[in-house]
Length: 266
Image (cartoon, rainbow, N blue to C red; front, side):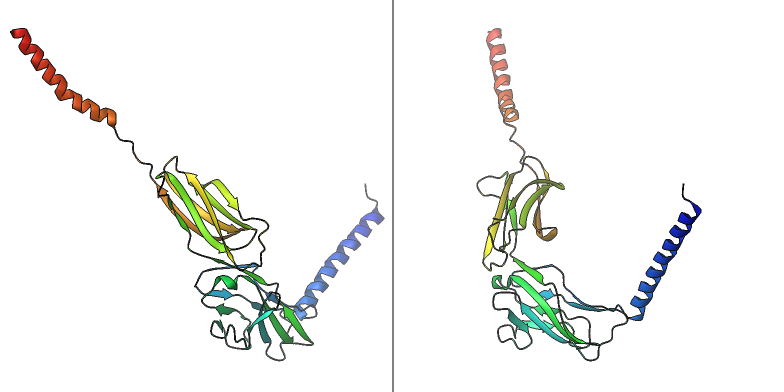
């Protein structure tokens, strides 16, 4: 049981805790604890030959004010740190900002006609002038490129389903086949595959269609679904050879009965 002095001490500490939380909230709202961050999604995907949005968002706390327009840089995080924006001869005809307003918080950029060589990590950088000058970096987004997935019966076996897809080389890629929502089997990419590799790899998996239903092939990178394809399989009905034989025997038996009856009358 707590004594009166101990209870008072607990009450004082509780009130102090509330006061600290209220002071922190007040400072945050007033801008003392203001923050400037650059947000990028960890993974982006694009079909080969299509366009992809390289997402970047500037986040300011309520108390933070920009004294001038931020200067935007986009770079590819390879060995040479290739610049995409601004003034990039290599990407000039393939990149465009989604919002050309320099004061916009949306710093995303569109990359057109994505090729296998575009696989890799991209980072958004902003030179910002608030109370102090600073450069803020995004965490970077990994771009995974993939081609059209094929999922169909093989020519050699009309009950064997085969799934195949070509994608950027990444050890976290997993190709899985499901039947009516239940995973049948999966195949992982070779773990020795370097995530920065530009050459595509082919993942394939086959299952035997033992029963009818909806089969679905899915390509994942960690928890991110990249692409999928469905196939509705109806197993072939076996030929009723016994029925065919029975039907052929009916006229033969009938003919034998007639011949037997005729011979008996004679």
